[in-house]
Amino acid sequence: MVWSERQRAMLEVMGLRVWSAPAAAEPDVAAAAVADEAVPSAPAARPPAQADATAPMPVVNRRPMPAAQPIAAPVAAPGAVNAAGLDWPALREAVASCTACALSDSRTQTVFGTGHPQAHWMIVGEAPGEAEDLSGEPFVGRSGQLLDNMLRAIGLSRHAGDTPDPAKQVFIANTLKCRPPRNRNPLPDELARCEGFLIRQIELVRPKIILAMGSFAVQSLLRSNAPVGQLRGRVHSYQGVPLIVTYHPAYLLRQLSEKARAWDDLCLALDTVEAASATAARD
Ligand code: URA
Image (cartoon, rainbow, N blue to C red; front, side):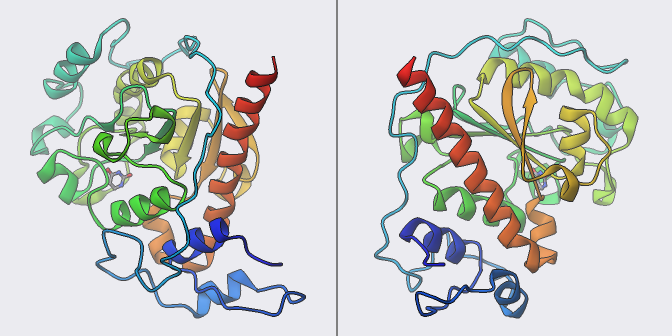
């Protein structure tokens, strides 16, 4: 396989070493990933300068996207907070003052989510960790740095200042808005109660695509306990919005060999968005 510039940029950013094989040879990405070093503990804020720095960042969503349709509200889990109908400021306030579960006792602050309120891409992670609990922002630790690098590789950003175009923006949210003590897994009751907030965030953003990162996002959005490895690789639907399942960045930091699959998932998401855009432009 001969890698395109876009593919190379993405592989490099995700910490996969790309070697220049003869055109006829097929690089073994998984093996390369295993042999490679981990993503540096403090990855560069920008894509690595030495890694094909001349490659243009991929440009996605070249065509105008169709007007956003309202998302039909799913049935919230029993016990979920009721955030139906709240606008952004009211939703923020409801999250900040939430005491629906015991996590409110141990949190430093809630972590609402961040990004363009009409971003075309929505990313759903698990729960804040220590760095997020302290800063109030999602994905600011090591896994957040990897996530930002991955997003940058496909021309996306969580920072409105990078581009005003919502097609290139992501909104990042978690299934839980409070840090579980010692970063333990979210409990079913916590997920159920917090779900009302995530449901309303998705309704307000009305994304064109959702990336569910890790098993708790999958449980919440798809009501499935199947492993991520079984659900990834195809397009699911959340209330009519295409949803791609992929590995959580924290898992990718531990399982280097899965980065190639995560890269495939990003490509599938890109293809899905572009296909939807092309269909809408034709109709
Ligand atoms: N992991 C998550 O799932 N979310 C965060 O915000 C940080 C780490």
